Length: 273
Ligand SMILES: [Mn+2]
Image (tube, rainbow, N blue to C red):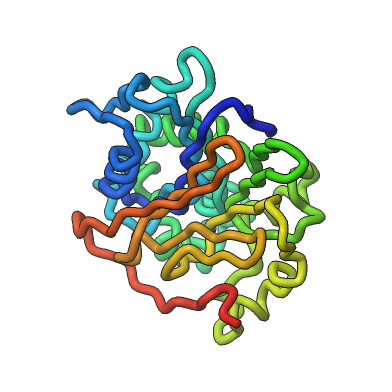
């Protein structure tokens, strides 16, 4: 969907239950949040966009807090005009399939993966109220958003990096590619630049940016007009955002707050050339 170029946006990368970091990042960017976890709509003019994967990997308590916070403020900030947008990540898509009892996920290997990678599904199966909130957020999510300022400046937002031919298209293959790129766990030992060669090949020295998350990097990775803002908050690193204002693009981040134990991973660096 095309979003208004009259508004300013804060675009937050993969949260994965890092609710303390999300709140801190919003506060650092001018939002006030009260004791009931309600964002004061008048405290900032910015609209909020979450780039997908707000669930999984974290503690159950933090996952529940994250879903409740997003749900509450999604309703609160969207009361008059839309100021809170969600982009669908592969984790929301997979958890949705599990809790909706997708018959193609009915084998022991999928159950093993559900426990290991999609722990929010187990939580939602125990908590019906939280499940309803998640389903509503899932159904309100976009696959892509585009900020088309002028001939010189635009920003396309998707959860995963993908080839340009898929961007802003609405067929099933394009949708799948905007939600998830080639699996790193199925291609261990392959560098990201070899796994996703189209990113560097299609990158151009212009200001028509594609901003995505999904790849859990050590810092924001930029190559020409391709930018990854997933800076591995749940791995104990940082939660980052891009800020879009008129024809300017800024970045900001907060450190992991140690309010839960971090997940573990080995970084596979993008644009490592
Ligand atoms: Mn992802």
